[in-house]
Every structure is written in structure tokens, then in C-alpha cells.
Picture 1 (cartoon, rainbow, N blue to C red):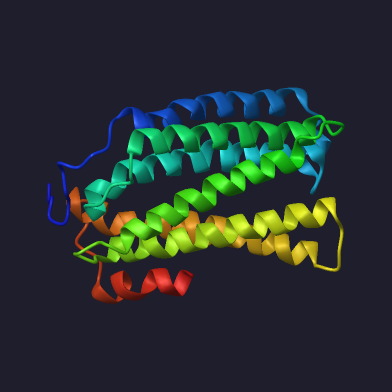
Picture 2 (cartoon, rainbow, N blue to C red):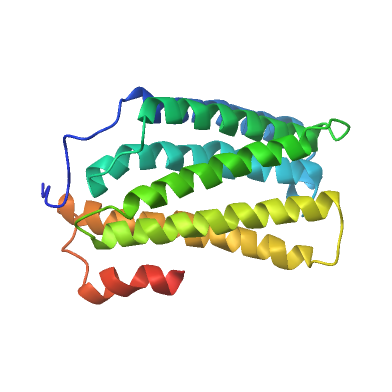
Length: 230
């Protein structure tokens, strides 16, 4: 293996990222239960209560929890920087994130409850705080590699996706003149392509050559591909 560019002695306490990893099967079971018991026509139709709940059980409960845990694990190794008070920060973010996801999903499955806006606030706070702290740490990186640059772009995209989600949620509760279809499309694009895809691309710059899966990426790809996707 090639360990150039890695800092192997700064890994965070293992329980910090594992909090997020261990919760993923729980949300997977909730999504499976919803798939099993809900009306198939409601799940397949656009913008239905069950459909929105299922999508966010996957994107927030599974995908986002995995990514937030993985970033805490990867950031010290790939960038040589660590999040402040990693164990305390992880527990606070975890509490806000899990409660926010549950409130948000239940607000769609139990429409009479008043859980929608509290769920949105908790999720938005978790994302903006996490991405903001991560970006502030990435600014101090000495050896600025293609992976670090891609991670920075991904964090910016994550903030944009979170803010668009908040605007969309406010527009749902207090309808105005904004185009909900445009907001939803932008939210999805920045979340999947701006955040998740660019993050995977950036990590692959380091991981694929490290395991001798393939030769190092061409300079053009490492320099520009993340910006082009963004």
C-alpha cells in the first residue's frame, strides 16, 4: 500500500464515528418496515407523505449518517486535522441528527403532529454546524491535496443543500411565491452530486492508488473534475 499523504496517528476516538455507523441499521429497518407496510402506490407516487418519509430515511438516516461518521474518521487521516473535542462534538451532533430525522419522518407519517419544523431545525443545525466546523479545519491544512480540495467543495455543497432544504420546508409550511419544483431540484442536485458524489470522487483520488487498484489519476482529473461537477 501507498501511505503518502496520510497521517496515521491522528485517528479520532473510535466511538465518535461508530455512533453514526451503528445507527444506520436502525434507520434501515425503519425504511424496510415502511416499504413492507405502506401502500405501494403511495410510495411510488411523487410528493406523497410515505414517499417523502422513505426517501429521507435513506438519504438522512442511512447515507448522511454514514458520511458524517466517515468524515470524522477520514479527516484526521487524509487531511492531518481533527475536529475539536471529537467525542463531545460527535455526541451532540448525533443527538441532534437522530432526533431531527425521527421528528421529520414522523411528521410525514403522522401528519397531525407538530414535529415538522423542530425536525427541520435540528437537521439543519446539525448539517450546518458539522460542515462549517469541517470547512474551518480544512482551511488550516498545510499539504493541500486534490482530496482536500474536493472535500472542501463537498462541504460547501452540503451547506447549500441544507439551506435549500430549509427554504423548501419553510415554503411548504408558509406557501409563498418561490418555485417549489426548482427548490426541490436544486436541493437534490446539491445533495447527491455536489455533496455525496464530489466527496466520493475526492476520497477516490487517495484510496484507489493507495490500494494499487489503478494508477494515480491524471493531473487534469485531480485538478478540475470536482470543480466541473460543482
